[in-house]
Length: 461
Length: 177
Image 1 (cartoon, one colour):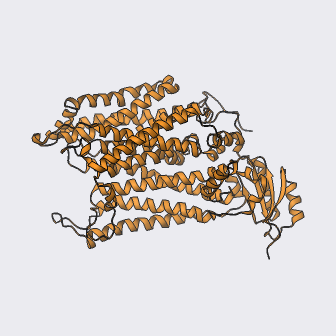
Image 2 (cartoon, one colour):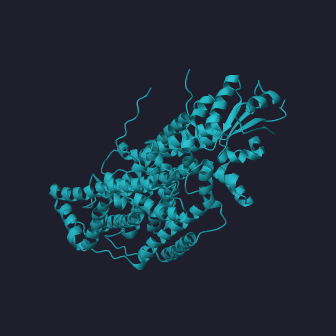
Image 3 (cartoon, helix red, strand yellow):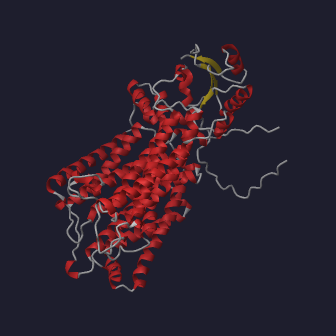
């Protein structure tokens, strides 16, 4: 006879999925968001504002193509300005999606099952927004294929020793693998939608996308294996992507960039801002669609804890950055940090320190972690802080480099802002399209979380 | 000769009954059967004695090919096709090749995982007889199905149906081609 289990503290008082759910109810509740004919006002409002900003993006794009990158505030020595800031910020946001879908899968954290789908969608759209910037920053975006090695009549080839070429490979691989991973996870749910919808057109479209998936045991065993393998591939990939992005800086000799701790510092910052974006999206969505039983307070709290942990790593990186500059004894490194703290960008620097280091300390308190409104505000603060961090690293280092005679302060123009805000519109537009057309929570993975899904082992002998 | 029907299908309302039924059918000697469920059930693969997935091998081969492609591409371009002498540094600068080699390894491995998955599952499949059962639409919602196919040597329309009926199934029906 087994002894009665000793319980000192109930460690998980709040369940991952609220009690009372059945396979049918889970399926219907998640599929209903897509299959219903009624569209909530919240969705229409968000979609419309996303679309308006997308138009702003297209407007600035047309102007950019007609006039060139001179419409932005970039001037030598600050050649990177907003475009690269936005690129690094967006791609960092994408990282949380892969972290949730791949790393937490490998670590067997089943609570991820109800947030991984929309987090992966967030990754895809964030990478799409990120990809815009290096492309537009090239000046002649229609010649982007020059970055890939292919036999050409010019007789030249990319420089494979440059981190900028590594970046092309890293980001395009990341976008492809994220899309594949997302689609593989969607196949069984597309089959569910195909079987549930009453609309002939929808059945046709979901049917074609589901490719004849019928949930056979053979399908599932291969599907499980594919998810595991893709997770195993995506894990080192996601860490490599921001590492390569940080190489764009560290391989250069610009003071304030040339440092070995950039890769872990960038990856931590990426996950930090990514989880903030997950919370910014999850908190209003679960409220509007009544999904509090599936995206529970525990999901929010766990995400807040990841934010706190990565926020502390980022805080440590700021200290280390300052310490290394001082300890190096290098006059240029010293000056770079000193200019950051007291120079023309001092207000931005201290604002970013407030956002990224001081504000997240609130997450130590359980009260803050379990109040969605406060978490939402904290996440917005972190997103702002991380954008400012990218801005300060890029712009302040470039503006004041080695020669005083070449110093020049960067001022963003209204088209800098329009392009940046425009990609937020692109992101919102794509994300709300996804919410309306595809299940935002992985239905089959949530089914596996229900207690009914447990197989009782028959007693042997 | 093609059998007159595809097989006989039983519907269960919980995963336990399905796994028990699959074990029972297997011990009766049925081999040509498949189970359909709304989510992956590990015990089911055991009960049906499914072979181990070949996907890891496919992915390994894809990854190795990707790695070789990445490395050889860079070697060929920087050493043979388009050599640039920068201060006499070696043309074969392998540490600088690592990033792209790694990225292409992951890219090829991921592509082979997805296309391998589709190939092993036989997807896309525009038509399958299982969908002829009207209630089969519930296999993607909350019901669990076991189908014994007519190609099984032990298959017998009456006897197999009676056997499935005895297994705590909600409903048993024939599957047309």
